[in-house]
Image (tube, rainbow, N blue to C red):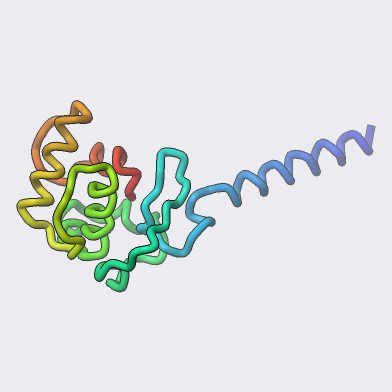
Length: 132
């Protein structure tokens, strides 16, 4: 009985540690790397100007920021432009500027995904783009 208890505890411990390392924030040091619905990274071979901008070390820190802070963060807007461009909604340059072209791309994305069309960065929009 004692051996069975130790084996069960070891199995639970190994399963918990394996699932902890499968979380998306353990896979890359780039907090704003494009991700799919499973949290898998899609690193682009092209280096954009916004890739060199200062950004937070962990995705967790972006969840606490307000919409205005995120709209002024060039690295975050550049990452959003890459995600919108990958999905076919944005065709402009990846420069990290929240321009009218970005607002238009956000509005078209919101309309296509049956969201309330505002042209602003909303929490639902961030979740649909798999961004923090």
